[in-house]
Amino acid sequence: MPDRVVPPETEGRGNHGEGGAADQGRTRGRTGGKGAQFIDRVALHLQAGNGGNGCASVHREKFKPLGGPDGGNGGRGGDITLEVDPNAASLLDYHKRPHRKASGGKQGQGAHKNGANGGDLLLPVPDGTVVKTADGEVLADLTGAGTRFVVAQGGHGGLGNAALASARRKAPGFALLGEPGDEFDVILELKTVADVALVGFPSAGKSSLIAAMSAAKPKIADYPFTTLVPNLGVVSAGEAVFTVADVPGLIEGASQGKGLGLEFLRHIERASTLVHVLDCATPESGRDPVSDFEVIEAELEAYSALGDRPLADRPRVIVLNKVDVPEGRDLAELVRPEFEGRGLRVFEVSAATHEGLRALGFAMAEMVDAYRAGLPAEEPTRLVIRPAPVGGPEFEVRRLGDDNFLITGEKPQRWLRQTDFANDEAVGYLADRLARLGVEEKLAEAGAESGATVLIGTEEESIVFDWEPDVLAGSDHGLGRRGTDRRLDGR
Image (cartoon, rainbow, N blue to C red; front, side):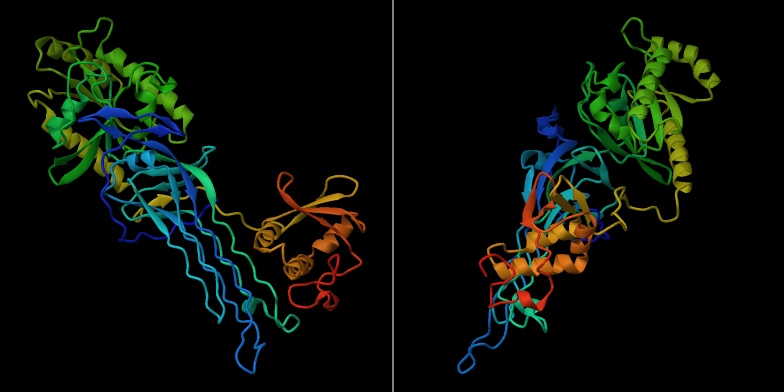
């Protein structure tokens, strides 16, 4: 699996439209605006480029028919890299075309000509994209324009026979095969990068608040679930500039999948400040600002328990909205002491008349500035959670039965992928490499005897050999004419 992150670069910008949500083949798109989908979760099927095969060639010219090996190396396969692009708004393009493949490297040629490398594939993603395995393991958290993550690495090219020549094997009659590139599925999940998140029941006035405080123009109506996608607006308060996100669809039970909340609760995680927008003029019976606040807080707590980014430490602000309605103003004055008694800052506002919005904006700016002041001087632009394995044995020998032994390890399996089993000399070269690695000694220590069955790879997929310790790998006696090896049957 990939674990490399390379520094941000500047090329590869592209324009991408609005997007929606997909979940491992199951679309979770929502329609808003003029029919544009907002996609914030997709399953991406990746195939990095395969490495090109090496070339087995002998230099020939007049009066010099055997001038020595001159086969070139195969080219490296292309990588697949994700890059944060400010112009990418969602993951819609990958929802429509989830299969992505990089080009492979070219085969080497004679006259020491190496094959061309495959072209790398650069995929732009929105700021705040999290990369996960199909099992949910986080590989990278991509924030900051230009941040890159090599999500699938291309295969190495195979060595030509010129590179394989040695004092003992002066004219190899074989070359190594190119290695296959990474092939697997990853999940891309978008989490909005906003300083302030507005939370509250549907129709509490969150979209109206963003529209009144910024240049954003969300769809607004007086029925539940008008907002089907997170809205993002930029707010200025004095010299402070910060972003505010409206998280739609929060109702009781949202953390268990009711309504739209579970799909968009992830967009709260990156916000430094949570603003409860409470409807003081709701026509629904049995609802009031205090009970709405407690329901939303319970959903935030339940969602925090599901993930690894708790929300309990985020500062809260209470916004009592719709005080332009006389009944709303009366209710706001009634419940205000309740919230202040809990140590919360309270603002009575009206998105319709803009009353109280200036003071609210400066309070938001103050809290955002306090959060930013507490950040490290050089905040990392991305977080790679999956480290590369360090240390450990290069291979292991395990006994499967009386006469069956399994050899596992990245290096032996890689060598298998490089070997042309139609060429006996290439198979003999593999035996020499395994012997130098110490495989034969480990087999003997495990109790293997002549004629034992040796599997290299995994129990599900492996190459089977008959072990003959009487013929030592690495000895000069195994070499025959080009392309052959006397240690193998029939030679």
